[in-house]
Image (cartoon, rainbow, N blue to C red; front, side, top):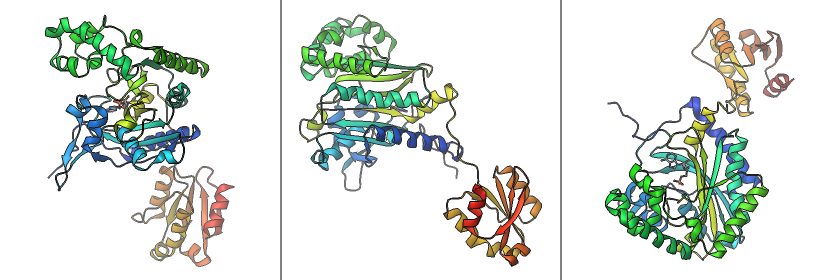
Length: 419
Ligand code: AMP
């Protein structure tokens, strides 16, 4: 019996694992420098959490959620996104008690029953941050800065930050009416999804990928013209902060985030050259969410990005991530007796942090030295019966060929290798 990996998923093989580790470490460092702390939530939650937060009519809930019942008939879902679980944890653990401003970041797999294609998978790995506790537009810019400056630091220059304001519930209600009026005459020509969306969530019509619907979008009213004074002020302050941070942006009034809980600032970071799936990061303010899932009315903002598309973009720009270290040493061991006796020494070297290659299947000196050379190790540590008797080893520098006899002692060996 042969088994295949589920469609839309992939293995991260050893030859690629270092890239993922590099990105995880690098993102952790960046978020930490901005004062964010890591939070890890389970990969499944009660399904209702996502229905409440994303909205019953959202694509995520309607089509993309991996829902299942446990043995007691309770409804759970594999998390399709990270914000609702983080906010659930924030409320459940009273994280606001520690400080009125909570700065969190997360890393982990998300699951959506999406149509797989390049840059779109059914299990994908997201990094993200959530800032909870203030409506100050400075934080909108700070959250954007964490994403933008990190991608920049990785070496990506072809980035386009697009921002928009989707207003507050008051102004977006007026805007929704304007959209409904605009689209109603085209009703017979809209795709079946958009016909539904017109009543349930008209802003989602601006997000439709069906060519005929895209055409109607061109003359649709712009959210920008429907912002009330406080929302206008907030948006212009965010723009001022971004300018002060030297972060270039373009205003795109067509950005509507797929999820219902977004208010005011919405943004995306696009990398040209990735085809249809060119959005590296998406985020926005969600002042309504904390209250919606059982907390107090507390404003918040965050973003999420995916590693898969990021790696595609890095590849596109030929940016090399730091590859894993080669072995420090290769242990070459001759004689049956020696093979048992060297084990404490070998384990001591490894537990002290040295990467030491060793192959018990190869017995001849020649074969082992050949493997040592091809392993990329800097040193060979050579031990035979004679060395064992005198409790010494031969340390051979594989680059210069120079060889010296030293005591069979891990500290001594490590020091010698350093000098
Ligand atoms: P979203 O949570 O839909 O706002 O997506 C935020 C980011 O996550 C996107 O910009 C992508 O980088 C990534 N992403 C979302 N969905 C997928 C997917 N199905 N496969 C791979 N990456 C994804």
